Length: 172
Ligand SMILES: Cc1cc2nc3c(=O)[nH]c(=O)nc-3n(C[C@H](O)[C@H](O)[C@H](O)COP(=O)(O)O)c2cc1C
Image (cartoon, rainbow, N blue to C red; front, side):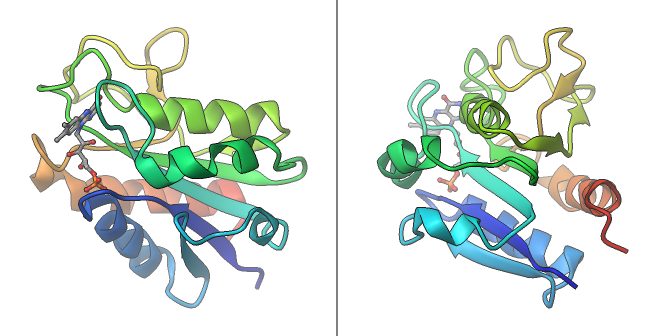
C-alpha cells in the first residue's frame, strides 16, 4: 500500500503529539511523519496522500518552521494529490485568529492543485473569526484541535477524522 506523508511543525510540542496520534490511529505502517523544520520540498513528490499540520502563533501567524519553509511550500505541485490538513489553536485566547495558519496551508495546497480532504464541522467550537473556515462558516478546511481549551476532545476528534480521511483517501 502506498504511504501517507505527514508533514508537521511545532513550537511547543503539541502538534508533534497530535501528529504521532494520527500516525498511530491511521496505522504506524502507513504514515511517514516528517518535521517540516528538516523536510525538503522534493520529499512531497513520493506521496499521493498527504497530511499537513501546524499550530497558529502570534495572532494569526504561521508556526516558525513552516514560516521558514513557506517559499518552498508555495512551489510544490500538488496536482493529483489528496491533501488533508490539521491545525492547533486556542479558540478562547485567540478567538479572532483561531486556526488561521491551517487555512493558509490549505489554500496554498489547493491553489497548487490538491484535492482537499478532511473538512470537519465547526459545531462544538466557539470563536469569533478564522481563516480556516469555508465561506458559509459551517466547516473547517481540516481538523481543528484545541489543546488549550478542549484537550478532552482531542482523542475522539482524531478518531473520527482519521476514519473520514482514510475513506476520502481510499485507504482501507
Ligand atoms: C503567544 C501565543 C500566541 C498564539 N496565537 C494563536 C493564534 O493566533 N491563533 C490560534 O488559534 N492559537 C494561537 N495560540 C495557541 C497555540 O496555537 C496552541 O497553544 C498550540 O497548541 C501550540 O502548538 P505547538 O505546541 O505545536 O506549538 C497561541 C499561543 C500562544 C502562547
